[in-house]
Image 1: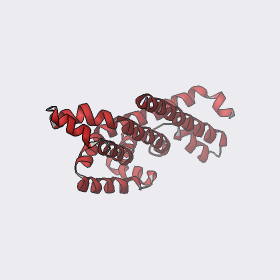
Image 2: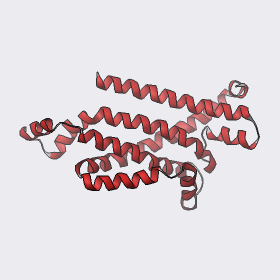
Image 3: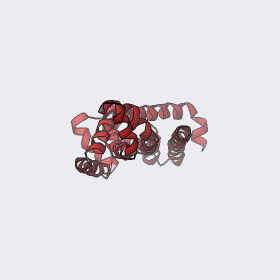
Image 4: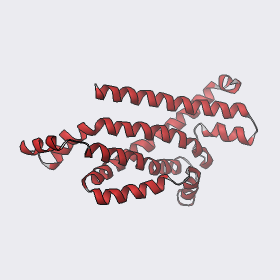
Length: 203
């Protein structure tokens, strides 16, 4: 704990880098996952195949996936972001599809009866109903990315993993503890924030 308290500014800077990695990846991942999730919900057969592919990607060890992108993208921030986006897809697409499939048929039929187009039904009826489940997927994806982003330091992407790797290389447990506590704190704060939002949606 000594390093953490004596180097708070350094730890805070690395935490900011860590957060930037996660937020950037999550925003890009959601932009990709939303149409994929809608597609998976509307076409169950092809949706199952899509989730199978995304599940296979999710099963790849994080370090192996990062190393796979290095020859293509080089070292740095964007290599880590691409890997994080790939990891988030399974969690996001699955929850979006599940949320949309959970919309009662009666509500959809009522929307059709009101003359809504398919797009209007999606935006005004289906997505609002599915939102709590989608937010649940965002919560799980965010916590997962915070953990996986720790490994991003291996490709010089910064973040709290820098402390952990430095601690391992220098045999300095204090750095490892500082990086681990910082990463855990980010995950706890993110979890609490999303859970609070989920409760508001449920209420």
